[in-house]
Length: 237
Image: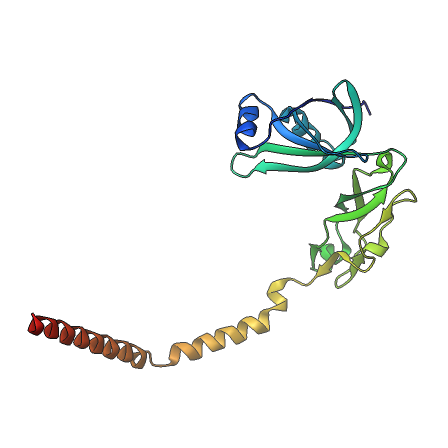
């Protein structure tokens, strides 16, 4: 895989006004953390960061940040996107040491059609879509692929069932459910729906005239009291 190099420029000004000016110039603000150094404020091109986010490894992509004539190996720490326009607003970077493990989240991808869906009429419920792992920066997997074709109705696939390789340590709890095949909701909740319908029918059968009558009486009483107060004010005048 070819090395990715992102050019960055140091910045001394911070704040909303400065950030607006940067974005008007086609740049976004960012901060570099890690390596036992104080955080460094910088600016980068959002197009390059978006390209990295859309790659196979996404935010876990390892790349070089070129700053002040030196290259620093980093991954994306955090990023901020404008919800309406889906525009990148800010990016933070974390400098890594290639010989020291780091903790990241990786996406889980399911492959295959479970037998519980294909032949037993169940539905696949994808519960855990990311795993927290620890490994060396160069060993970060793009994703964790899980084969669910053998999953039967009512059975669970847990973190402890996954095979991720010797270079990766999974930090997510072993008992956490990744996926399971469940019965269709229509069948599971049939009794509950029947009870709800019965309760609604009972409520509909109750006379509503009494409630309306109370409301109307209360309204009349309030109107009478207002009238009496107005009359008292007129008499005082």
